[in-house]
Structure formats: structure tokens, C-alpha cells
Length: 372
Image (cartoon, rainbow, N blue to C red; front, side, top):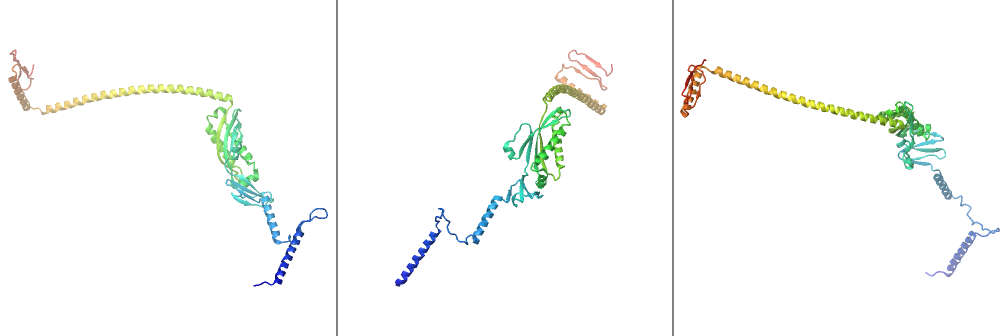
């Protein structure tokens, strides 16, 4: 469709006018030197700062800056509790692990460790930075006067933890240095009280008894504090350091005791050996006596048996039986004489028929009666 030339020129002139206006505005916005030789700022619309969007953006930025600078929250880790302090007043309910918010300036949160901690009462041991980070600390060894006034040094280890349920009351009462106000005084007082009952030379031999008393007494004294601020885990007696003269005396006593024990052992051993020999001899005599008694009993039993047998045989004999036995014996003699004519035969007297000597060599015969 053909375009009207007049309308085309009109549009072109309007476009050229718009470009000129835009150039004028840009020139007005550019900084221009003022009378003092500086540059004047560009023209800003008067309603720019009163714009609601700009005001909201500024408010958000200010709030974010306040939050970042004031940090009105705290993160409590496991093994810790938080104590919220409002205008100097401690909240009795401890804050458990997690994130908690508070009002800056007005409120604050104190984080305390409730894990098991260790104090070593030692002369030279040092836990170092790593040990302190792990809740291990060192205090000086406890010097104690024994029952005779001699100085003894006691080294021990105490394990404990802050009671998380009553932590706010504990911190409010004793402050963050509660360990030095509760643990250290109680331990030292109990150790001095227990060890002071014994003489120094008895301490090594009664070590277990002393360790038990110290542990029990510390637990009792801890239980006397209101709100049970501390939970005691263990008390370990590590070393008893005695004076040098006491050590030497104990060593001498131990040497003498060992020698006495050795002599006693030798005596006891000799006694046991003698008792062993006597027991063997007694046992052998008893065995011989038993064997002799057995032989005697055997002879008696055998004699009784023979007597009973003879008695039975005697009771079973009669005249007819004896006559029969004589005839049988005579027949055996006759048979023997037939075989050997030179045999000598002796007949035992018995019965009514006299028995005779038969001597085939001397041809002598003698009559023998039943009586002399």
C-alpha cells in the first residue's frame, strides 16, 4: 500500500524532535562545573527518597545489619547447657542443645560445659593446652601431716561433671570458677582428714583402705552442697610420696620382714619334711602290721578250717568204715608186694588186727600191737 509523502515527513520530524529532547535531558544530567570550579550533582527527582520501595529496602538492610552485628541467637552443642541472663537475673531453667534466640543488650546466654572433667593433683605433671581443651586440669599435689607431724605428699585424680539440671543455680552462686570453690577445697580437706589419722609408715600397707575412705568422704561432702551442683564420677589415689627417712625405715623393715619370712619358710619346710618322713614310717608300720595281722588271721582261719574238717571226718568214721579202709589198704599192699617184693611196708596200728613190719631183705618180722 503506498505511503503518503506528507505523513512520512511528519513522522520523521517527530522522531527527530524526540531525539533532540533526549539529548537535552542527558546534557542536563551530566555534571557541570559550577562557579567554584567543581561539579554540581545530577538532577534527582524530588520524589525519589519518598518512594515506598526504596524505604522498604533501606529498612530491610538496616535490620540485617543489626542482626549481623548484634547476633541475637546462640547455638548450644551437645555436652553443654545454656544459662539465659535477663537484666542480670539468671533463668533457673537451663537451655538444652540447639539454637536459641535472645534480646541483645537486655539478655545474654552463658554456655557452660557439662561433660566429665578431670583434675590431677600432681607435683610435676602438666596436661598442656590439649589436655585443658579436653577438660583435664592439674592442681598441686596435696601436702598432708601424718599422725606424728611428718609431711606426706598425696597425688590423686578426681573425675566429675557439672550437674546440668542445676547449672544455673550453681553458676549464679559460685560463678564460672565454681570448680576452685567446690572441688578443690573439698578434696584437699578430705585428704588431709583421712591421711592424718595414720602414721606415715602405715600408709603404703593401708593404701586401699585409705583410697576407699577418701572416695567415700568426698562423695559425702559433695552431697552436702545445696542443689547438688556436682556429680562425682571417680576418685583415684595415684601415689603416696613419703619422706626420705620414712622410706629408708620402711625398706629396712621390709628387708627384715622378708628375712623373717624366709627363715619361717625354711623352718616350716623342714617341719613338713619331718612330718612327711614320720608319716611315711607310720604308714609303712601300719602296712606291716596290717600284713602280719592278715597272715595271722589266715593261719587261724586255715587251722579252724582243718579242725572243722578233721572234726567232720572224725564224726563220720565208724568200725565198719575203718574195717573197709583196712581191707582196701591191705589190698593195695598186696598189689605193691606183687610188683616189688623187696618193698618195706609199715602199717600204722589201728583196728583189732595187729599191723606188722614186712622186711623182705632181713626176713625179720615183728609184731606190733596197738599199745606199747
